[in-house]
Length: 493
Image (cartoon, rainbow, N blue to C red; front, side, top):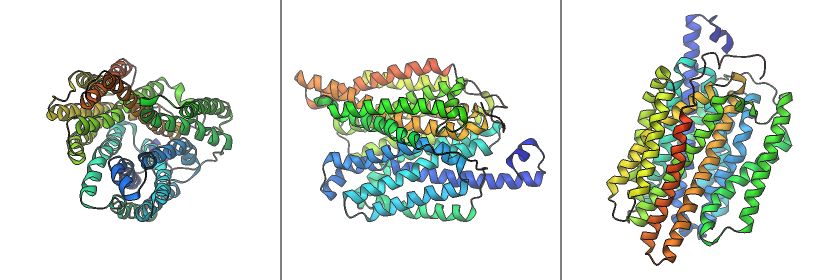
């Protein structure tokens, strides 16, 4: 029986219960898969010093294990909208988890840096497919009146996995080899792959979606160039911005502009790689702006707080990871009740206090961060920040995608996931660049390295506070999606 028949009420109660069990299986498999792949995305940062020693590589070479992952994600995700429409759910899931499992196995057995880098790239190809597939599937299967609850579960994945990734990495590295960061993940990935291959049904109806090769090339140049340039910008600021980096950013900007132009042309005949008609919906467009600011604040803070705790307060890597763990867990625990509350009251009563909390924390950190500030202040600040972000992400996911017609779900999911990658790189670049420039000025003035770094981090928090304050205004323009917005349609916008 088709999904349209079920939605229209022609299904019997037995059919509906059976479909619900099937839908729950599909969504839960995708949730577990998404948790595993996102967790893996965040474990490498803490491991860089160990990898430099064990593999005998420079800091730049070791950092490529993270940079290459982000680059691959940024170039593959824009294509997933077309993939989700073109291929059955089961086949796409098996492909994604097979790639992730293969990359994990290659990384675990890697004899050196080059093979480990190849494994990370293969992992990223699978990771890039899972998140858009999860969001599109939830939007397709879950009734409008309870989508907030399901999106709350997605928010758990997005918030808790990055939060506990560095902590788990620190624990593993304190007693085991870096290889075990992959060895411990591999059995879980294989188990999910086997279970999905045996049990996951196809829940979509594939349609012919053409692959436009020039769009793929422009996507790689545009998104890849921007993410690489932004992720490299922070490390370059202390000595000025190299010409090659300027060229990379310019190439990314031009490639993105040409990509957008080509999609606008192709979507007239329904041949776009990433359909940008999603932005004709005001709620979706404003939500994307809020996503950018929120992801910049999240990733920038995740970079700055460990730096402050370790380099200014003198904490160990493991201790700083443990200090950030409660905030991540609080964000995850709040996601389901926030989702249920969204279903009852809509986005405005959640987004406004959420953005106010985030801005307040960043303003506070911009004012009080110094070598004399006790660590409990940062623990409390991170927990409150996490509460604010929990009030933001679930309403944003649900409102943005729920405001689109069903045939644009896949493209909306791909757009949101792409924005997360680009905004994360931009937030990291903006915060770290501000920190580096300010710290260099303080050092030139004769202050100690610790005082200079504290001043640089305060300046970076100030930039984040200003951006987050602008997000408060944006929150008032997010509206609850109309109940009919996600209904199946036969025509196109």
